[in-house]
Image 1 (tube, rainbow, N blue to C red):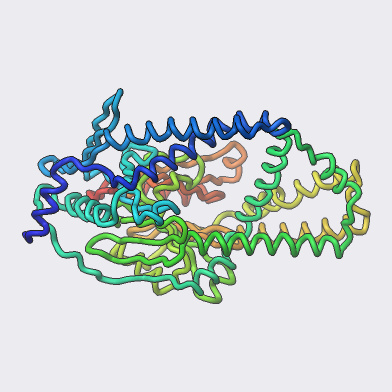
Image 2: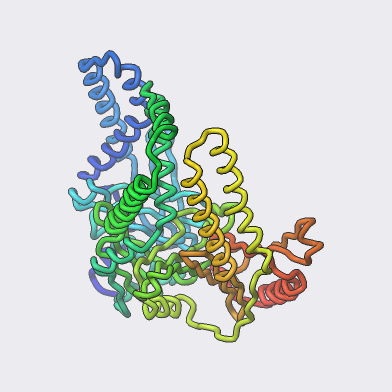
Length: 502
């Protein structure tokens, strides 16, 4: 063991405090939270009769209280390693003292984050995501870069070596970097419909917020809808504006979030670093991976790019399909097919080829067509009949385009859906534009649920829900007899396997 390693062990054996300059980070973090949670109730009543003196005094008093709280939090917050028990220990609190002891074996991942203030002060925030908690149980707001990296190194080593305290040299096995031009390409070809939904939600949220401030523009908006120009040229202009907003939002958010993205294979783990305004460093262990997912649309297929999302074990699994705590997801944007295969091989060390492929029943197409096309068309017909939004010719053209578009969506949802089972993996594919493929190791299945509604029984169909520690995946309209054979085989393999799910 080197002299440096002995020095580090001696350093982390005693209680450590955060960086003194980190008090500024803690101060601004608390101050912003107080302003957001409380001062808004003071500001809104003053909009019509604004008192600048009262406002400044309120801000100064709030800043003074925040400074006192910040100093107490800094003074009575310490962290250290307990090398005998392989625990990471946090002590905090003045009036209510708390000692938090976290076994290193329960740590899912370690993130090193930097927001704008962190960057200015060259500090890092350490977040440890642990099993059994729906949030970041361990959070150290502000430490120097060297301390942050040493903590990550110690934690990674001690997790994989029960009681030995011996620091091994880290070897950079391989590296993946996403350049700026690739980020532009992936930003211009991803998340069209998610961003459109976000813009619509943001628009109506802004209307609601303005209404809370007694600035009611809803009547003006309603008047525009009733009397506005909705001819072909106007609709085309509105469409171009919306498309431009979606593309711009996607491009800017992708570049800001994933700027200078790099993924390195370090020993048995994968370290990812990225971010322009707020930097983030994630240490991912292959053993914690529950679902390997990648998404690719028609354009991305032509330029050989895809977005990879790796779901790790999460203690806050949603009851809805495939949703889990966002902190358990690892994103890799703009990977080509070769990079995707390398990452998959690194995580799983195998790749089965003998697969049993199952397609959904054709009724999936008709149900989607009814829900996506026929039902909305009937609602739109009723609204236009009473409120006369569009002229007859424009209405017929819009309805025809919508029906054709919904038919295409329903067909692609049916065509692109399949379930495959191999010796070690389950693969589920779905989507009409962004085709998502999710892969699960069979031995990591937590439970399997078969749903069969009353009208399903007559058709001999059923739905399958696969639950893992990283979320749930659902596949619908499967032949019930085939599904029973598959699930019996999967349950048998899970029970027979002696491999750990984490």
